[in-house]
Amino acid sequence: MKRYRLCFLGFGNVGRALARLFVSKTAELRDNYGIEWEITGVATRRMGWRASDKAIDVATLLAGNDQTASEAGLNEWLARAKPDVVFETTSLNPETGQPAIQYLKASLQAGAHTITANKAPLVYAYDELNELALSKGKRFMFEATVLDSAPVFSLFRETLPAAKVRGFSGAFNSTTNVILETMEAGRSFAEGVKTAQELGVAETDPTHDIEGWDSIMKVCAIAHVILRAPLLPADVRREGIRSLDPATLQAARVEGKPYKLISRATVNTDGSVTASVRPEQIALTDPLGAVRGTSLAIHFELDTIPGLTITSHRPNLQSTAYGLLADFINAAADSRE
Image (cartoon, rainbow, N blue to C red; front, side, top):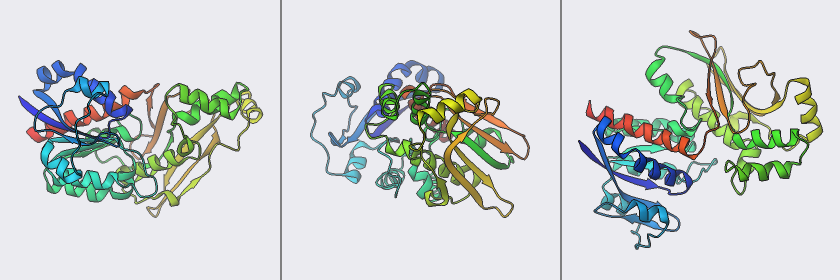
């Protein structure tokens, strides 16, 4: 039995869902995986750098009642909390990936397995972070970054050796799915945004979703990790969904080829990658044609398998949290081998 000291960089909706999942899975982690746990550090804008030599009370954290004075900064926080594992769920910065990259580097340097739900570090620093993790004998993991908890990266890492990806397409954004379907029903763009926000899939400012930036970051993350191609956001042709109107969307649905915000990447014969994120009409017989509502999907074309589709049906905060938890369990198992 090993007791793991856990730290949370970011404690918003995803971080709180992860803490609740740890609580609900306590007995299963102990009995099936030999894992016990305690939280010794939490960092947020409101709370600052909260760290403790002893376990922090989870119920108090979840209730938002922890008013303990914060530590001075990142390095001091890590030194006091002494984490075995750091979970990073801070806000996306699609321009540089900072400060998340700095946080992840420091966590690995401190000797912690480091697990993120943030796409940008994969885009701007995947090789550096992975090499740092290997040099420290730790894991850098990120299954929650693309399809919440659906196995995309681990599928290739663990079960598809020597399979060469020729390209992929995906419906990567729940917010745009909901907006387009709301407009198909004859309602306005603004009403579509409101519906997505009420469902909890859209931010207060959904610009990154609407303009395609969230999807671009996912395309680039997959390209870096699975295709081993250094694709950057500026390399991806981008078109958001603002130009679409209810009449156009209704006509496309009647035609049997509704619009979706589709991400694509193709490996060219010279090894380069061509990628796009833009609205496309998709036939219902297409592997992505059945994706509705908040569901997400990716379809791979491989040299060994003509087509392989992974669908995450109606993912929620617990789904994202589970991706982080699964990475933790796998990292813990690897460290014991």
